[in-house]
Amino acid sequence: MPKSNAFMQPYWIMMTTFIAVLIMSIVYNTEAQADGSWSEQQGKLTLLADTPFYDEKTEDNKPASVISAFQSVQVVTPSEGQLLSMNPSDKEWYLVKTWQGYKWIRNGPSVVKQEYHPVLFEVTFNEIEDLYNFPAEDQTNGGKLSPQRVTAIGQLFTCNKVQSDPAQAATNHCRTWYRIQTYLGDKWISPTLAAEHYESKNAVAAFTSSASILQNKLSSSIRDLEPILARASLEPVSFHTENGIARLEVRKLYRHREELNDQETEALKNEIFKELGDSFPLSITTYAIADKADLRGNIVSIDAAGNRVLVVNYDKRTGLENSSPKASWIRLVADTSVHRTGHDSQLGLHDLKTGQTVEVWTAKFALLTYPGQTTGYEIAIVDEAKPGEEGIPLGTILDVDLARIDTIDLEFKEGKPLVIHDPSIIQAIAERMQRIRLLAADLYPLSDNQPYIMTLHQADKKAVYNAHLVLRQLPYSPNSLTADLDNYILKLR
Image 1: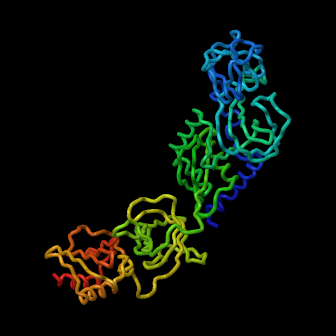
Image 2 (image 1 turned 90 degrees about the horizontal axis):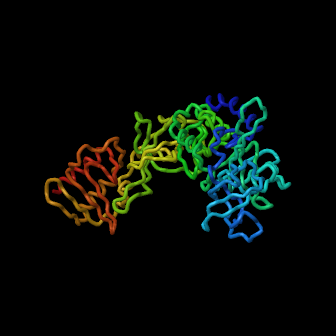
Image 3 (image 1 turned 90 degrees about the vertical axis):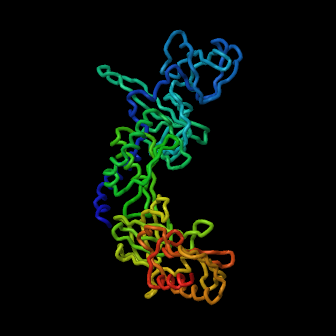
């Protein structure tokens, strides 16, 4: 086990014990919003059920119409000159604006002054919870839920001022209510301890101004949180905000195929909330490499100074005409695992050689250059280069059968263009080309000034060869065989 992982064991044991008691994070719960920003909607009411409205302040008449559930209405004048009651059970009348003008609605458990948020995410709780018809203490219906994970489809926050000690100033006590689907229909729960899960791409969280501020704070301080991640042997991969949810993706150092479990995820959330000063909708997921490698190919160049290797797959091409092979510079980092297929022993950059066939598991993102540039988390050596076969055959690079060339077009820097049909000349050129094996060059030539360009035709297929050896967008190093070919071609002018 790497030292960093062994060092972290006491930390994770401590956090796991804490988590087992609390189910880890308490998201949006307790008294997180002491400023009351989640409590009252000024001058508005939220209707949690279909609500009839009347022309007069009496139910003796037939309702004028019905306002659909989960809407907010504007209060025109508080009933009988009183302020809106904090108790949803008070039977008061409210004059509200509707599409039919000013109408009266009667207060009840389905009429609240808090904002309702349609959401979609999962909630885990570890105690038996009462079911409520509406989000109020006196609205229990006798139903109960055992500890489990449920899907929340709505959310509402209440902050009621209470005074437990008359000698002390009033404080805000806030609760989170979740609307869930149950065997009794849509009901509400309000767990004291709960953990919210937003891992689904379709998850939607309640959008509040306080949550938005904290998410922006997290976005601007990801690098400042690296010490927290490092203590857990993690590294940030990506961050973005979507559907009201801050989405942080991390990866485990040295354990590329492992994902964070629920305990580790919630412990990390708590650390982040502690650092930022409050909780908010936060999804933490793990980037783990798959069983199948992201690319396979031959090492054609090694850049020791840059700690990287160039891997090219000549069997996979990009582009339609004069297509290029799939190629990527693979950078090795501190926890890159290099090994031979079927062996656990760890190797390093010095064990990678040109000509080897390798499989590579890469980072999530890559620079869209050619060749591409990305990080390799795991490199497996599949085959060693055979002695005397260093480099890649020219026919493989050009993606053409050099034994079956029909015609050759030559363009010279000095001299007239030449079209070759003579089989003996074509054979002489093809035989020289068949002997050529090339290694990739570290740099592209400084100038495109070259003595000739040769186009090989094979039925409806063609390949371009030039003296500067930039073939299919990749540079290669010249050798004695390419020099012999150049001399033969130039004598044909």
